[in-house]
Length: 374
Ligand SMILES: Cc1ncc(COP(=O)(O)O)c(C=O)c1O
Image 1 (cartoon, rainbow, N blue to C red):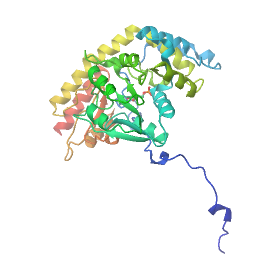
Image 2 (image 1 turned 120 degrees about the vertical axis):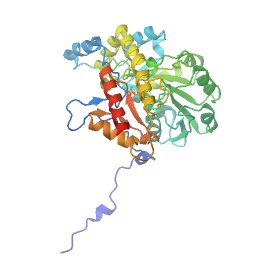
Image 3 (image 1 turned 180 degrees about the horizontal axis):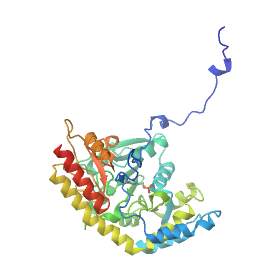
Image 4 (image 1 turned 90 degrees about the horizontal axis):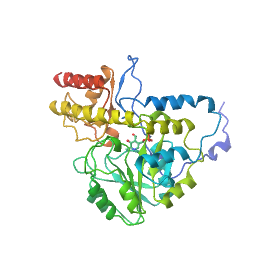
């Protein structure tokens, strides 16, 4: 007997997402698990090697009895602590569930269909993903020596451009723009184009010509600076970011964000982490010691790492033959070490390795030496 055809099926209506949404390739985070290893060495997501401040952990735990309460939606204490720490007006700070949320909120407020969002070719993937999720067109400007090329970005500004996202330093390349170059980029942008400087790794940088973006935000109405507690403060699991904005943009974000977008646990741990200057100094000096150490080891193996100023390195492997990035990634995995593949960033001959503890760094360097000798 022929199956009965439900006539209503052919005309059935289904929800359809907005334009461009189904073209998004979902963001793939770093692996956390590795079969056969109970505690793999996790160097895939640029989390700080030393873990969070014990004071942040204590503040998080102390909150347990109060989690039935809504958090302070204005993030008053954290914004004031940030204001004091960085000498900023707390009224111009807005906090988010990770800086990812702030990237999304800025795009929602300032971009949309028929607009373009500029970023650099090997820039952080959440910029094109976020742009597409609001129906905007992401436009990638080529880089020079895996570094943001200011002229290439400026050459791609059109009447449709609404935002430019620059990670400084950039993830995954680790390279950075000097304060002078960033100012030159800003000077070349029309006033209606918003420049978002994403300084997620600012605390790791120890270069005299670097500035995280505060000075530019103070000097202009179309610049914002984004920061995170996920990296040097090692609170990635709690999701806490913040930004420093011109007053009009802070006002816009406070209109579009959820009223309780940052959890009470994140707020409490963030304040405690910020007040633990000793833990911060320790994390910074750990990276000052081990990042150059790791980069030198990789260079000695002929792996031409970029001159990274972040807490990660980006060695380059052969495009063909035995020693490709894919075979290196797999070899490290077989030795219990998780790193990050870079094909999604248009860098198929690279892997990104986060600076770990001293022991982890020695393990990864020795394992790669073994790989290159194999
Ligand atoms: C450049 C850059 N911006 C933003 C983020 C997101 O940070 P968060 O954990 O605060 O959302 C990352 C995380 O990898 C990053 O590398």
